Image 1 (cartoon, rainbow, N blue to C red):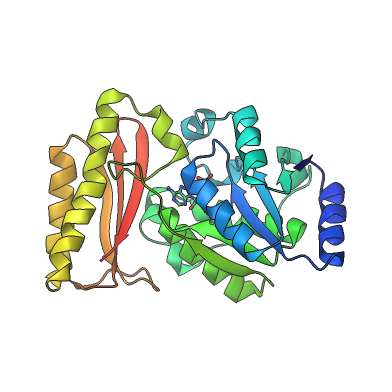
Image 2 (tube, rainbow, N blue to C red; image 1 turned 30 degrees about the vertical axis):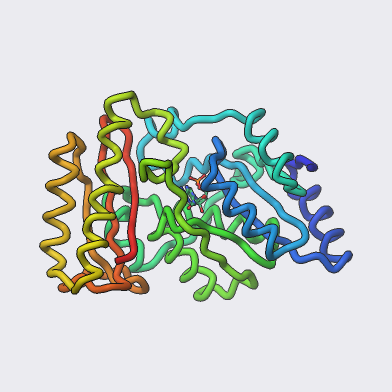
Length: 278
Ligand code: AMP
């Protein structure tokens, strides 16, 4: 695996892969990698001969300075895993490489970013689409993989690529969970023992409600109330719960099979997100 930090070096490596007729697959991350990230990398490897992973903790997408400050990091462990997985290139840009001294232009996410996490984290998705646009322009991948764990982000990026005609195919990676159902996240390491136990309630509530909708639609409000109650009873503080149309992310009146339930909740200081297709 080669590790590169400059745009010039990256461009040279990508040109060389393309000259060999290789498809370039890309998995952007913020590091502290886990099985969720690895599954995206495996997907990229199935679809592309040359796989690039980036690790960049993007300051522009953190609306909360404490969250940025406390974001976990372990580069040597990440490097070990990426080598084992057979990743071809690791891009490790410094902040100044992505955002030059005179940086001023940003990309704005559209209406898909207005609700849910976008409402709770002002500016977050503008930061995401800006860095993803910059990374796409630097790496020029043929394929890029994003996880369904961040379902709103995934839809926003699919829309970005469609709207701005990025020549890249977006693949969706399924949400990977711990054995007890908790959605894997780099932030889970910040949960203490009690919070970790409480955190299970999110996925349990989502599974219970999905099982109920198998036998017929339910009013969305009933679904929202059920999940809010379950996670409150467990000792978490809900941020939002919404039943939405998969494509528009607009709330639905009735929760039907194929709709998606989005959840964000706080376990202490740690904000957790999860989602489930009904
Ligand atoms: P992050 O490092 O948190 O920015 O995530 C990088 C990519 O990994 C994003 O596309 C996420 O959606 C994806 N990802 C994070 N956690 C999971 C998970 N548990 N399952 C699947 N994909 C994930």
